[in-house]
Length: 149
Image 1 (tube, helix red, strand yellow):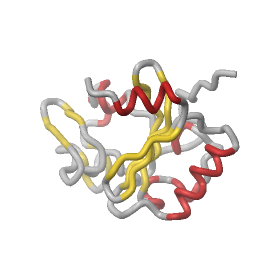
Image 2 (spheres, rainbow, N blue to C red):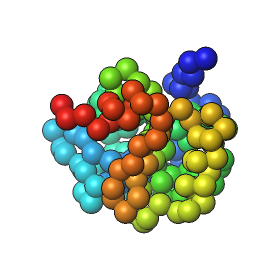
Image 3 (tube, one colour):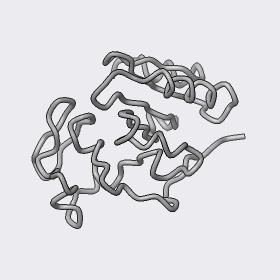
């Protein structure tokens, strides 16, 4: 059975969470680069200053897993857990990414992730520990993640 990740928000909003914009992910918004350690130029304490005019990529296309999947516990909201869970795709293979967002990956988050993986709810996963990326999943996924483009 092939699992397809959700693509629409379900009863949750970002609220005061701006973890995806606060320098824990990377991208370019209207010519302004951001990366781990450098927040998006357009993020403020109140949120995105260009929300209505934000670019499709990376902003509108970003899929915060906490936001779109109500099976993910409330305590895993990025602003509370300091971890950004995101649905991503590489070479047509879907996976869950777990990025550290300001502190090392909490053991509670790793425990939850691996319980979900062990129960078959997460077929492929990329997770960050002390800034280093690790992969678990199908052979095709692991091969795709470790190949050089």
